[in-house]
Length: 228
View: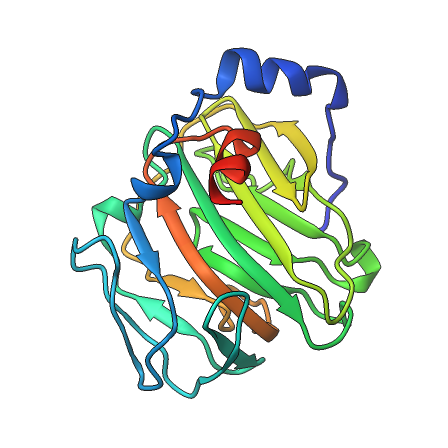
């Protein structure tokens, strides 16, 4: 997965004008699934009322961006059982807030992954230690990725990642990067994993808050404005 990525800055405006649906004022309220971490136990309710509840074994809570966040030690995380509602389908988007305890270390660290479909992670140091978003298309290729900035320790990052079967893009605290990623994504039965180790990728060490999944691609600038 560490092969050379491709970044296509010239078509960023096309991503917005042609590929991204323009989000409405309700964009932040119509998530297919959403998880907050106010309750201290392992059960994490899906705020969408669609029953996509998660289990956060081995995790604790800490002050988050708002209320409490999921505190991760690199070995724990939240797992949501597979559902067709969480497949890449014809396009999707992920949203979360992340704060690392330390800077990017040796191995990559998972933020959100559904094995062999999509992955949002912090790359290893040898690949720049950046926030990167991958979608695995039917050609069995994870690359090219949409590669964002390198996160700093102790700072909150608002991350939105999306794919529309033509392009993949990731938005990190106002910085947008994108790559061409045409194709289809084969659905599978893997769980939706937040922060925990998976797919040969280590777990995150730090905090994750306000996780959302959208079963459609969305324009990150509009969603960020709506979310504040």
